[in-house]
Image (cartoon, rainbow, N blue to C red; front, side, top):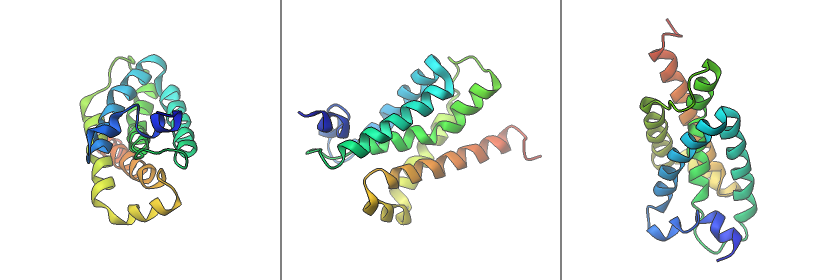
Length: 152
């Protein structure tokens, strides 16, 4: 298995079948928490950027299905949670469930059920999932604004 295959298939998760992208997105949740715990939002953002560059590099070279893009989209959806906690100075071990559950459901919902995003795939495998992650991040941020009374 080549390096491009390991990147694209998230070190073998692509073997889990038809819904392997969902498993890659699920794997991003503990990864995001661990990165947040180790270095806060800057490390989550850096990992997302480096991961996106790796996806762009691996896409034309991989011989396995690309599922790493789903992981990058999911990390992007968790930016408001990580960034908000980091900016507020909250203990990095705290990663409250409404943020990551909402981010996961929103990102996967946009990925699976919002057809206009699928058109972005013609520009490469990353762009539809990055757009779904960005829309999910906006939704999570809006939900946090309502929940925490910022819009009152």
